[in-house]
Length: 135
Length: 135
Length: 135
Length: 135
Image (cartoon, rainbow over all chains, first blue to last red):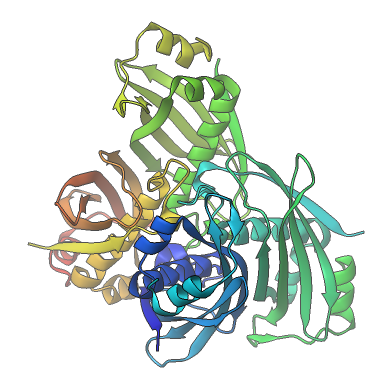
């Protein structure tokens, strides 16, 4: 199972005037977790050589429980579905302590060819790359 | 028509390693625009007195066009639908120059009673407040 | 007198767990204010054409009064001293309401030649540019 | 020797339009590193019980080398001098790879009594706390 678990300790600057993590910060947490996933499973040298750029086109985030200062959280990241052009990732935030689910994220991205500037249709080699991190 | 238009000039610190506005920053833009909407139409003294707290429970954001350094953008914010418990806002980002639509946001929030800590059902006075900014 | 005044309304996401503006955010406020100064007095087309890049090398910031949610602040920005290689800017934050001084910033920058990657000695044409925004 | 070393991997959202870490982000890095120092050496339960609040009053930061995407950095944090009212911390950023010094930070803070709202003179028990993490 290709999944990563990213650990973050909630800092004072993540907190906003309501006393919990500001909703924009979650997208930074998600980006950090996706980068860990890419490093572990999607050999970043390949997209660089192929002029492929991961481009987020849609994010959906459900804030189920607020996150507080100094909480230890874990972000579980995985690829959920590879479609014709876009790929859907699941990113869930749990409290480390009790495994309680705090946040549900869905992130859709496409692979853009940086030469043409256009998203690439997911054909066999790109699918193998997304599934196995190799081409 | 109760709608606000929030102007932002994209700054160097909004930009990330891909050369366009980082996807987390959009949620800060949206929060700033919602705050302007609240100030214009939802008299912030009322929720403070009633112990009502706006709490975002879900955000959906579609990134249609990237935003670049020094662009002037406009965020159009309005209430789209008031449901049984939650309220749905629409937040769209346009380029000021040519009115091109860059981003589509949907933000769902509930009103939490800060004493009980629970979301409040949207009954008549709360509906009037959300629709007219008065109770 | 070449000075700019940048107005910012403190947002909920600027606030941290202590209930006032997080100390990192001040540097974003300063950057926004410097950008306004550059646009008003330092014709940004010139450094772009000359391959000059403003590069901050040192910041000193004294936090005299905390800043709170929804405060209207004004940042006064000016060039204080042009030295042999580096230029010193003064950036002060005032509360709009009562002109109270909240923060004192000093920002030193050099002009880097983006071709050589090295800071440029401030000779006559660069001095005229920094003083008058023309060459 | 009471010193902490905080490891951070530079993320895409730390980078700004110049292609290196934005100068505001360094203060978030420093805050994270100070929090680690407090947790290791300054038992955070003590200031909470005593109504002491660490309050940063001045930061000086020298940017010697830019930091780039995906760099592994280490922040070395220690107390440099305990004065009559304020305490001076040293925070230096090194590249992990080659130990090259990238950034020199000096952070001055006072301990504010949250009841009176005033900074406390550093008498014997406070000095012992800052030096040994106990009272």
